[in-house]
Image (tube, rainbow, N blue to C red; front, side):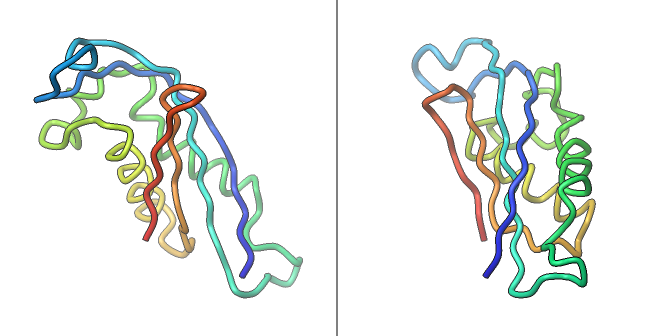
Length: 120
């Protein structure tokens, strides 16, 4: 099995509904996102997928989150904007934008040392 990954970043604010502690208040992060796709076989060029294609798809998937208050984004009006749910959102958006990609996982860092991963 082959996997390839690309990373990108976005900045946004959020607060966690129902959380008791500092994160219940409005605050922001400079998020890092890693998209990983997989394939059992390589294409005629010897690639899983062109990195340029992956970078473009990831950029499209996160552009609606960049410099936004996540709690007001349509998806997060009913879903708490935790790192875990942001990872799931990006996974689903990439899959929607380019369904032929075999998305393995999406990892989201809210700080340098704290991350969450969503995979299927």
